[in-house]
Length: 401
Image 1 (tube, rainbow, N blue to C red):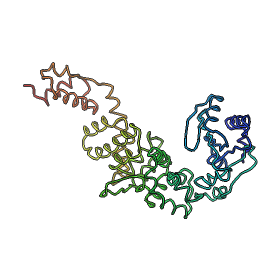
Image 2: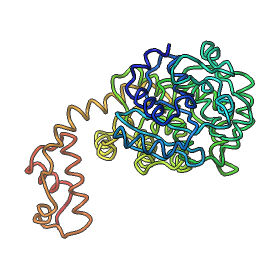
Image 3: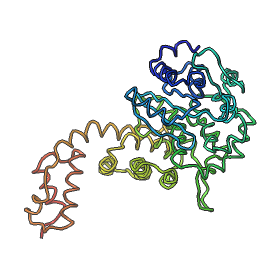
Image 4: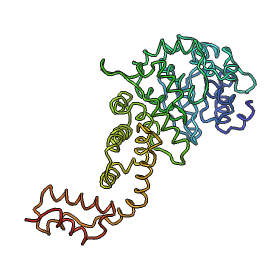
């Protein structure tokens, strides 16, 4: 099972380096790396547990292989080397043995190690059997309390591996979920985004709703109850699975689907990037505005304001529509209009500028801006195509005194 790893250039470089440092016998391949190899998944992260000064070792190894060094965790002495889109983690061995180290880990499927000669699997908690049974089982409840983010990690593995959560473990997750209130918000967001990145994340989200995990993560005013909208999320994911298009900021998009008008406030609690916050705010606003489209000019104004997020806005609107996909024609019509009419007419702008309107006898004022906006809207709608028609429209609609 581990034979292929011997040909991995990043693994070979790391093992040679550790051998040179006389750490070959006291270092192990551990955790997620062992799990992914046993699952025959692509190995993008290579994790080592090492009895030594791992921070300094990681710095030296990064220099040796021309990789980038990242101080991942100063408390637990974890140094990360990034090279060729592969991450290599050097973590200090916890306790006096590899068995003691594994006993401090989160779930049995992550509590396995392999000697560097790849001949011996160390599996004190039967993680290999749990992998076979597709089961997420805690090593012990105290480990969840030591790092409450592990509660959320359980649901992440449920989503990304499509494993079940063992019954006693699930009860422990519910008991300890409230401890996540003190977990760094950025770490919480990272786990949530990984869950929502899965194509059918609604299955895991439904479990999290049942276990009241979102209530444990987010603080709300006493009168405001968090009611995640699982049906909107499910509809959005179904549409995406049957579409060739992709949504940028996918996890943000699904977050908005799940929490609707509460999303703009809730996302602030998990320290989003500015572009993530803006994306969610714009998407929620688009969801309100799209329901008010009645005329051709309404359609044009909507597209002008939300052009940068048009596809996610249409998908969001359809997913939240009471008629769901049975009203798909409405959203498809907007997209079709955008492609065939709007984009073609956009190339014609500007037909008139502010100074052109002033030259017609108007005083510089807010009205000039309103006239420009209306003319541009009519051009985009295909109602005006040249300067002469624009001037005629101004004369008819705005009476010059």
